[in-house]
Amino acid sequence: MTGRGRLFVYRLLFGFVLLAAWEAASGRLIDPFWVSRPSDIFKYLWGVFADGSIFGHLAITLYETFVGFFIGATSGIALGFFLARKEVLAQVLDPYIVAFNGIPRIALAPLFIIWFGIGPNSKVILVVTVVFFLTFFNTYAGVKGVDVELKNILRVMGASERQILFKVTIPATVPWIATGLKISLPYAIVSAVVGEFIAASKGLGYLINYNTSLFSTTGALGGILILALVVVLCNEIISRAEAYLLRWRPRENGRKSNELY
Image 1 (tube, one colour):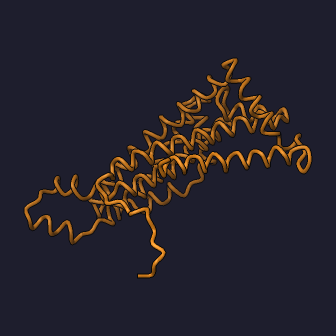
Image 2: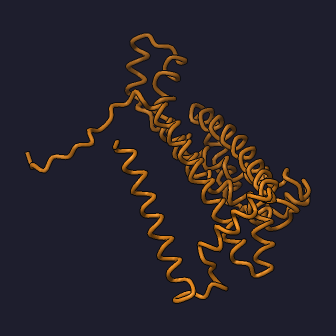
Image 3: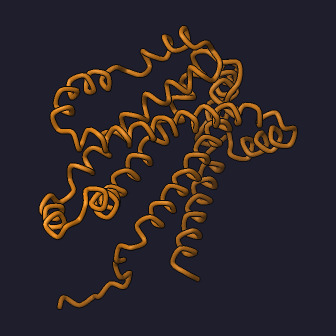
């Protein structure tokens, strides 16, 4: 079995141990009214997937998340590259960017709902405001962190600015961008769900809020579990994309020596 296969098995075993401990504690150490049993949650999920009632809610939340994530990440990365190469403009805009980033998103959510309605558009805008700043600051820091001496050497050797951008700056910034995307993805889903909590007629956030209003911890935890699985899958996709883009980097030998010398 390969190292990746063993890691996958270890992760599954750890998850099964957690679920078994939770199932054993529920009804004995924990009142199932407050924290439902895993078996009841899986029965609930099987039911809503079997009758198809969950797909409409899931589609709305995924649409809000990924559209907002794409717009926010694209604009944040683009502006990060642009301002990192325009130092004077970056210094002029710095206090304004910091001020806008300091505004609590939860305070903006009701305004976005007033301006854009209770439909998906208001949640998409909310997600954009969260993802934009996380990807922007990471990209800006990554571009500014590229070795200046290396770029100067390449200029002396006759490389154009376009060649330096594509051969040095972008590859060196990919880990920073990937980190920003990984960090912003959970926040994107949280933003969409928070917007649905405030005002929505569909979505996983609406479904979780509806179940909690009925004191159904089984339904609420079922919706939360779906969100967690979406985050894990999307994070794995970003990690695979990062590994592919950085395939040129030398990999550390996985074998560890027990000798000091």
